[in-house]
Length: 142
Image 1 (cartoon, rainbow, N blue to C red):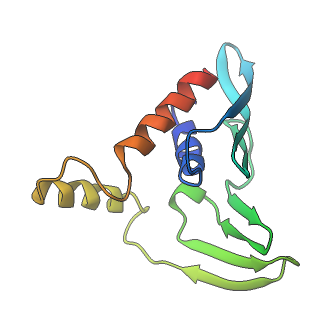
Image 2 (tube, rainbow, N blue to C red):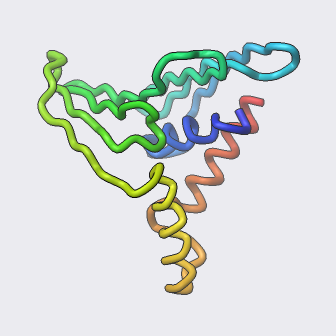
């Protein structure tokens, strides 16, 4: 949870209007390590289902599903450069591919640098509130 789980929880928080009113997590330990998590969160009419695993050998994707379709972030979702839009019948409508120089983390570094140069203490892209709620959720689950 405290290693790569932060990416999944942070991703989830980005789609919630407020702190979830229901948070449930199932932790699966292996030799005292939290290797797998199944997490459910709910806020108003949004439900979040997240699976985090250090033992899962397949791809790491993220999908947002709505009444009119879905959006899918390809492997590895937290730094993918490919996102696809599907209609309600599951037909792919569009795929956007974004090229980047390295693994995508350079954008985080550039944003911190931009904020420092501008004298900003907080990014409008990732707010303190978002960071705080991500950590608060992780603490609740641990």
